[in-house]
Amino acid sequence: MAESCNEIVDPRIRRTRLLLQHALGTLLETMEFDKISVQEIAEAATVNRATFYDHYPDKFALLECMVGTRFHELLVQRGVHFSGGCSSALTGIVLGVCDYLAEIPGLACGRQRQLEPHLESAVITVVRSIILEGLRRHDDGSSPASPEMRATTVSWAIYGAAKEWVRTPNRVPSEEIVQTVMLLVAPIAHPAPASIPISAEPLLTR
Image (cartoon, rainbow, N blue to C red):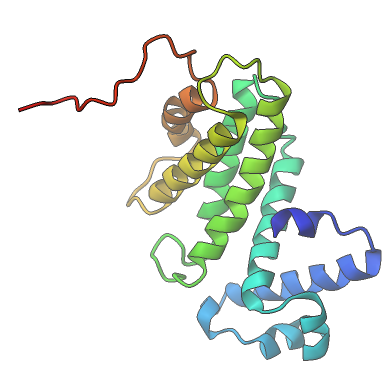
């Protein structure tokens, strides 16, 4: 969903979708997602319900598009571009996810539970796309895992770690937790070549 939103080139379609995304974002500042209706979104965007459904099948699709677009724009503004071999760019992605999630109203306290799976899907889609592009560009075949598997694992790990951090009472600043997250995800993005065969036998035997 996030990628297709970012690929819209028709200025009229893009303008209408941005109006709807902005309207939903504004409503989320004071309302829980499950209490917001399509009619309220349309009215806040100054369009009618028919126009809403011309662009999105429901408010869940709008939410994923809004999250994906905003998160992608955040990374662009920060100049984050993962080339596949630069740890500083991966650090920028981790920091971007942490900062973005920290700004979502009600996420830290679990108030926006209906929003969470769509937020998760949209952010992971953007992160995976960026990481996969970089890994494919520098894949020399030495890794035991494909670029696709590494990109998927890293994107889920980054999101999961960032969400855990957001919900931690008296959490440390995002700049500090990033180093911890990097210790976890960097070896997944750039694993050492497999030199010892992995045995299928259990580690512990009776």
